[in-house]
Length: 176
Image (tube, one colour):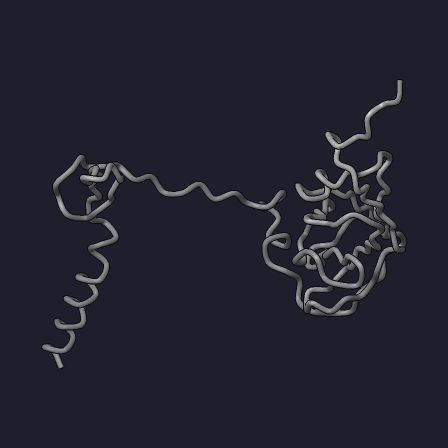
């Protein structure tokens, strides 16, 4: 039994040691940068990646969704209409849409965007939604509020968004 314990500890030590191994950077004959754990280049110091936390991450209820329970409907769910027309070029890049809820979005609830009856964006804990890759024409946009179990519980009214066939650079020439 003691031998198995030693073997397990040695295997665990061997499995965790590459995580602390040195990383080397060198350039191959074609000019490509190659990263390796074998010496032969310059030893590189690799920093841990920066992880961004959601707003209010100190509030643990934002990070961990609330347990599924009874959903309380919002008094108001509204997609703010765009004041300027949207060109095809803007629609391809993405159009940010502002969502207003009363009261503010609750921890555990998420919002997704539906365009022309199809889910367009994954559920997020956000008041900003993004419509990307829209084609020319009219589109029906709806914000859907999901509870912590992922069930759609409430929808905004339909907002019609018209994407103009002409991009900003394709304006028709002026007559003289």
